[in-house]
Image (cartoon, rainbow, N blue to C red; front, side):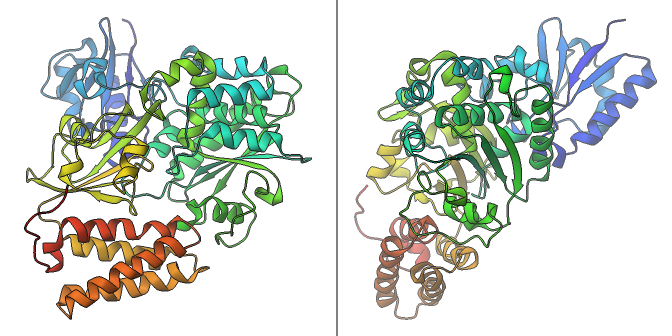
Length: 519
């Protein structure tokens, strides 16, 4: 009797839904029935409403079942799922599930397909191809490839990655660093975590290529402290890569060195700001540094430093493996390639959707997300994290790209999308943004530290109806001061959700609706 392979995710979202219990139940039931099975703990495909999503290897390919609970396992065996048998939890061939089939998975091509810690699996699915090509190029050629691809920082700032790399490469210093900002703190975001838990060697390869490009020999991955599974997986992956010769003093026998270490973050949202992160890695309190000097010239320990987020670095191996033109052919305008959009909040089909820039918010929320989980109308969609704008319905058909969103005062950010139905109180959500800033501010600059505290007070007075017209003017002035006077995006972006809520949902603040509102 042939051994059948089943994949049960080890991703944190799947674990929260009971994946460990499901894996144990499958093993126990197979043993009871005398059926030989092999269970592989893969990463998540990103269809979170179906987790745990169990896949079974059949003669017709991998067949998906989910969401599977431990109690469902005996009935699934009875239905012949080891041969792809029909069952109410069955979804047919995994790759044919519409949610997956309509994506352009470039960075996430291996996600859920491989054993995250298997070097053999990684190599069998185009792993290390980019690194091997990079080892045959000089640093200038690697930088040019990244420049030509059009890759921009996926952490939110959208600064061209190649320009940052070129600045570090051209800087004169005895030591340079590559730092990955994996302190993913935005609400509704999880693509960084999925990458580290589900395809860690891709991030390692991207950081290696960055090191080769700029002449850095040391890298750090700064991982959010609330991500214990990501910390454990990255630590284990680095150790295995070191033993296999991909890290260390002689990378792949090239004579070039690159060391990589994990640093657990300090548990503060502001440490996601690049200079506060550097302070934290150096063992100091995470306080924002004034710029200039830029980290590319004086970063970690005062040395030139490449700082990119997880998805930025994870996009690099494919660019080097297939060439800049391949990646650049996806996207629109100056927004090239793909972005893993993350659907969260009150949404029926929450999860990860990797698509080329240019699709619309309506396509994402309704075409992929299926509308609200509550079944009620969508009222507000926040794009770009807790400090992102609430995008009104009049803009849901705008193309999702950096310039189009900037044109109407919004940000794409890290690709986080949080949906609210018509029960949402937008004044309360605006207050939450100010309270969040007050709680998480590093305290270095007055507009952020004091402005956010005063912002909470002003919104409270508006909600209570105390001289509303005067308080609205005061709130707008306060937001202007925070936006233009804060040291970093923590204070500078807090006005985005506040002003957009005030602009598009005035009735929630007790204000009269205008007879005609511009789109």
